[in-house]
Length: 504
Image 1 (cartoon, rainbow, N blue to C red):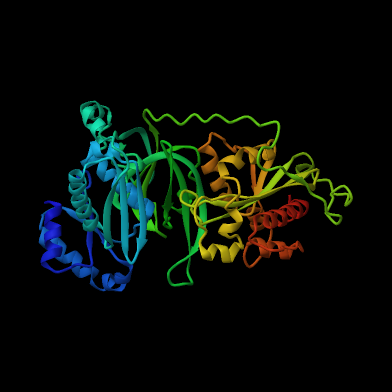
Image 2: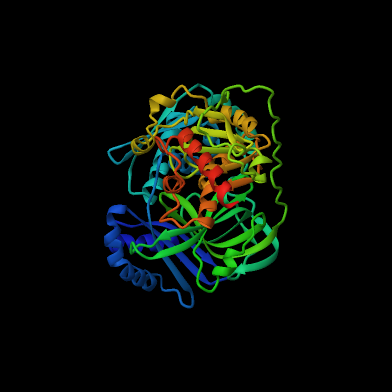
């Protein structure tokens, strides 16, 4: 049974609102997985006709004694994902041409992706690639594509002269080594495979796949279900596969809820499930999970850069406030506050996902001996446009950040500011996710002890919600100009001091 038969079915039945995203077959489970893609505007149509299409496909394929898993996903494509698709296509189908590819320019207008490939190829080569690339993209997506080539230099002849040498030294992108695991200990469901491709192998939604990696963190998250009333719980996992960090989600059942709650961090895991588009980002939905040992899996050695003698881009300033709470003056002795230094920080960002979004502002304050002593504050150039909705929320515009330092330059200064301190934030998982992800890319590791005002409040206070504004109001802490990093950091610091004073 080939992909062609499914495409033939779509064509014969004039189903032009679906594209075939993926076909795979699992021998171990005797399961044929089909993923169809559709445009968002056709969501209602898909819901109405889904069962009918599933039955028709099964009858058309007509293979006895196999199970089917047929899924419908919303098609999604943006500039960066398109560039990745084109590069992968070139690697597989035009290896020499891929070597000559300098960069890819993309802009989107009127439902059309306009693509310019900057290469040193001949016009004849360009035409051949355009035809194949257009077919490849149009078979998968509902957008229009216009592809042009721009000749950037005259190095094509040089490439031809060394063609055999170049091809010998280009790794074959098809032969991606699988990762192998052993000592499998099932935690949720049953893991039936001991090999899997690394996460970076997958570029779009996929059904019934295995992924493995090192579990960096697992967090319980409460959400509201589609009916708008019922509350549910999911668990968000951050998993590192080789040098790539990806998100996974577990929706626990009543039977396995306690098991999921007790999953420990800092272990190697292998998972079975599906890669889905969630809020336009790929996330892995876990069906089965096991603890394991990954063979030949070398966890990246990350050297922590030294703490510089002087600040280079951002210099902290002294904090002064006459009415600031001083634990000595109030005759309150709290060893936790008095015996430790704390850096309370907050970030403003271009969005929620640290793997695709950027930081626009860092605000932090230092607490010594129970009082706020220093302020660290700077805008960050995110190297991308800030969405208008984000500007409305934070007040931070593109103009305000265009001359600001880049995050890679600020991280060493922020690391120096945090040296020897306990890190504190409101919902620290969010802010620390950005810091951890981008700092590791330049070999900095913030392995500090951490505390969270939201968790402290949840454990000790009974409030309608646990947003910073609500907690601050309940403790009589002013929150001025919220959603600016330094203001939120300052309010969080005062909240933290009061929470420790009352409950620690």
